[in-house]
Every structure is written in C-alpha cells, then in structure tokens.
Image 1 (cartoon, rainbow, N blue to C red):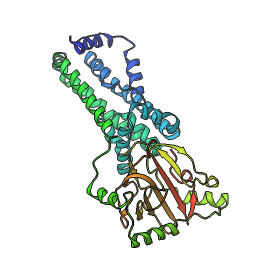
Image 2 (tube, rainbow, N blue to C red; image 1 turned 90 degrees about the vertical axis):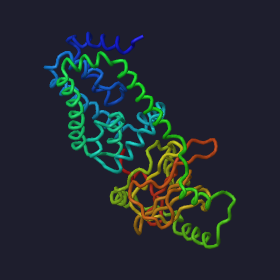
Image 3 (cartoon, rainbow, N blue to C red; image 1 turned 90 degrees about the horizontal axis):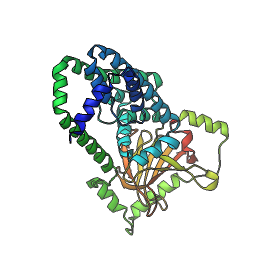
Image 4 (cartoon, one colour; image 1 turned 120 degrees about the horizontal axis):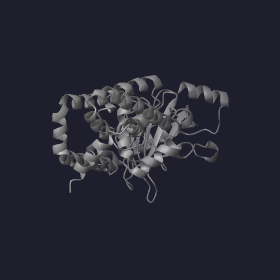
Amino acid sequence: MKIFTRGYVRAMEWVQKPSAPIYLGGLSFLEAVVCPIPVETLLVPMTLSKPRRALFYTLLATITSVLGGSVGYLLGRWAFDPLVLPVLEWTGSMGTFQVASGWFMRWGVWIIFIAGFSPIPFKVFTVAAGVFTMPWLPFLCAAFISRGLRFALVSQLIVLGGERMERFIRRYVERIGWLTVGVILLLVFASCSMHSPAPLTDQTRRIESKTSAGKAASPKREKNIAIVQQKTILPKAITTKNIQQTEAREASRWIWPVIGKVVQAFSEGKGQKGIHIRGAENQPIHAAADGKVVYSGGGLKGYGNLIIIKHDEDHLTAYAHNRSLLVKEGDVVKQGSEIAKMGRDSGQPAYLYFELRHKGRPKNPLEYLVIR
C-alpha cells in the first residue's frame, strides 16, 4: 500500500484551491509554536503547482513563522513554568530543550541563525530565546533571516528543478516519506536517551569515590569542610527592602543553573534558604556566573553531593543534591559551564537545591536570576 504516494496526489489536488495560502500561513505560524508538522509539507507541493508564486509563498511562510516564533518567545519569557514546562515533560522533549538551551548559553543570538537549518524544531529555539530573555529586536531579525533563507532555498530548488523535480518526487515519494519517518524516530530516540544516565567519566568516578557513603574523611578534608561551613553560616539578620533591591539590581548577571520548575520557593523565616528546581535525572547543572570552586564533595550533612562557587568577595552560590560532580576544588569556571549532573532522592523526583548568598546572608535567588 503506497501511503505517501496517495497523500502526495491528494496534496497536489488540494493546493490548487484558493484557500491554500491561508493554510500555508496557518501551518507556518503553528509550526513555530506547537505544531510538529514541517512547513515544507505544504510549501513544496504549492511551489510545484504554481512555481511563479514561489516568492509569494516564501514571504508568506517566513512572515507567519516569525509571528508564531514571537508567540513562542513570549511563552518562554512569561509563561514557561505554568504552560511550557508541563508540555516539555509530557512530550518527553526536555532533553531536546536542554540541547537548545546549552547552545544559547554558548552562542547567544547567533544560534537563531542556525536554528532555521537545524534538525531540532524551530519552536524549541523560540521558547528558549524567551527563557533566556534574548533582546526582542535581534531575535526578530535573526528569525526572519533564518527562516527566510530556509524557505527560499527550498522553494528555489523546486523552481529550478521544474518538471524534473516533480517527476523525481512523484517517483520516489515513498522512499522520501519513509526516510523522513525514520529520521523523526531517530530524533525522538536521541531525545529520550538524553534522560538516561550517562556513563561516569574518570573524573566523576574519582570525585564520587571520595564522597561515597560510609567513607570517613581525612583530618585535612574535615578541616577544609569546617572552613567552608564557617564561611557559609547564614546569620539571622535580614537587610532592609531597599538594600535588597539595590543588591539585586547589581547582581543581575546571574543565569539559571538549570531549566526547570521551581517547586519550593525561598523562605528564610521558615528555614528555606534556597530554592528547589525540578528537572530530570542526569540533567546538566551549569554555573550561574563566573567563579572559582571552593568546595566539591559530599561532606556537608544535608546537602548530598555539593558544589560551592565563590564569584567575588561577596557572592557564593551552592548547588546541592547532585548525582555526580564534574569539577573539583580550585577549578575556575565560566558562566554556563557544566559543573554537575542533577540527582534524585529515593522515591523523589529529580531536583536541584540552589542557594545564593551575599556576604554570608541567604538571598532569594529569584530576585537575582534573569527573568524568564
């Protein structure tokens, strides 16, 4: 049974209708937000049917795709926790989103130019751009250029191929269709495999072997732990609201150590001196800012595998309950560097416990981290 051949014939008949451009624009808009169907499924047959309107179809698909991408941007910036995160978890797309997030941390706005030609769906990049508060105008320009080049390339290949291209597609549409299905399944498998625990590196094994349960720490290590504890004791005093707001503005350079939902908020009065960010086991943990690792181990009771980074004379961040630690004491890390893998307690969802302290006092991380 030639499923794709029949579908192709029907598509060629359907795109002759006057309403076809409306559906192309609608698909392009939705594909940039939620729809998994590629725009090319309509763009190609419409261009084959009416090659003289190729430029119009390209501009229509580009403009509506950028508009849809803008909606994805707004969702990522203002509604990530209540709307986007549950969808990522339900569809098993958190791994794919983490890949895109890592690219944003490394390349910033330039990744949007690449996104138009990446096998990762464009909607993932539009949402991530909002999460990382990419400037609005550069995002629009990059999205327009990226999507425009992609659609122009596809439509021009069809126009140049002409009747030969139409005959080729008609002849091999079954193979092309099943190949596309195979690629999609491969991407889904790769996305799911990102959630499975990765093999421990030699460095990780050495770190974990030092912090395994039941192993007594050396006197020198106990002394180092005591020094860290002494430096990170949390005084009861609380600064005034104005001072807190000033400090928060000065510390606006911090990025989220991991993408996830805050399931337990900061509340110093109730003894909650940090925040719990839910995620996936083995999910990468990143440094919130440049700094030096002053502690990496499991010797502090109640924190599990813990990393503490000193960023300057006043600021420390702590990353607790990790599955594995990828840095050691004395390492200098850059903002966004992977420092650990997320862990989970027995019978509990995976999460990161994150603290931020200014001059030894706990601060609400949500007042410092970039708005998402």
